[in-house]
Length: 615
Image (tube, rainbow, N blue to C red):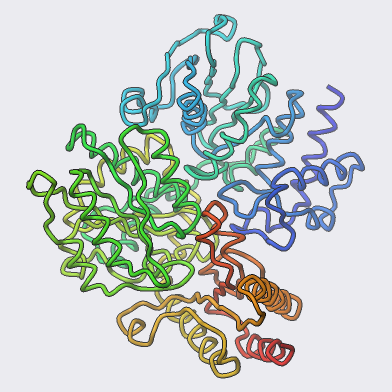
């Protein structure tokens, strides 16, 4: 108990003194982040501060970044997990917090599906409303037994894995009964905490973390903060935000205006949780409407790592789902590739779902939209000569959320199109991770199934995320225009002072059509006698440029994967950040630069000129 008091008193001090960034940032600094040591490096140094009873703001600010992106975890979720682990004599890695109340259960079920192991879900009271056992079995393919109990002692040994689910305002303590492998404590407002019990279950940890990384989000900073207050016996005053319905109405209205859509919008806790609901909703739709047919998700192999990885993870779990590569960048033309792939899928009489980014990331390419429409609308035949199933075009338009792809009468209005956007970029200006999706009239009927899975995974945007979007969305298009102006000017400057550099950015013609991203990628000139030497020289030069920018303009230039922030300039190398899980051959070792509407452009030009003079 003595140690409990020491932990709780220390947490109180940390909450009083913590850096404001812990609560406010969506993307942390990559310059103090080592992906191999995610979470552990932060905790090792946090433990030292705890032992020395040092909770000073300067010491907390100097801690290395726990995760590079708050969707995956952050200082406050990590401290919460550490505190709960300490109170229950567990290792910190055995405690995992979620914003969702159902995904931790799904995470264990996923591993047991792949390991062909039985699962018992025991629970007191009720399971969360969103937990739809029939759909989880039929669509996700997960198998399990359910057992309602009065108290924990009723749970006997089981041949397989036992999950115990309890809905509880009190998230701190658990009765770690040896018959239970995983405890999932569900809080009505904050999300859930999963505790891994026993050494034999520690092999699940990285798999559960990976589900949190790809299909949902960690407990949000605001909710982790409130949960820590509750843990220390000082409940933070109010869970309920005022005007929840009002904020929701404002957000939905803003999305309607921005996208020009007539359908309802769905708002999720992040871009990837939105994408997961889209994928599972479409799988569900195919199972209902195209019984027994193969389902094919067509995905660019070098697109953002999360999209790629998630699609393959869905395919790994569901028998008739497969991923088909869609080469879209560089020497590959998206339209040509789609034509080839759709012909092949038609001949197999399979269900085609295409996921693509426009503009592409990181090469910022936009296909010829007339040709794209023609190739998507083309009637194809199966091997037996029947009309093939038409594709659904799932469009990630995070780089250009102002383009009205789903508006009635737009280029793609004759094709079933679903468009989605990651909200941590332009929609929120980097303040929250929430994402949203809309559909055109032709795809409208698909939204009900997508919404069903968004709710089942408890991945809807939180009330606070909605409140922030309600404030930020109305100014989004203006911010996009201002940031584009800065980017165009910077790109033109680089062309002038370093003409040998290869820049990937939209043409003036595309910009006039409304494609005004504020991100470009840069292939610096290189030298060397062999391809290997040339590649190594270029990679070293990329880093030299980024480091110079950060050192010379630390208040604005950051080494960060973010985009669409309210101010500053962000530099990254996609191959080592956003393309984390992409196959090595498909990675892009180029510098990707993202500019904001509010930055010192002249200073960025000056430092770039200094760089040019050094090479």
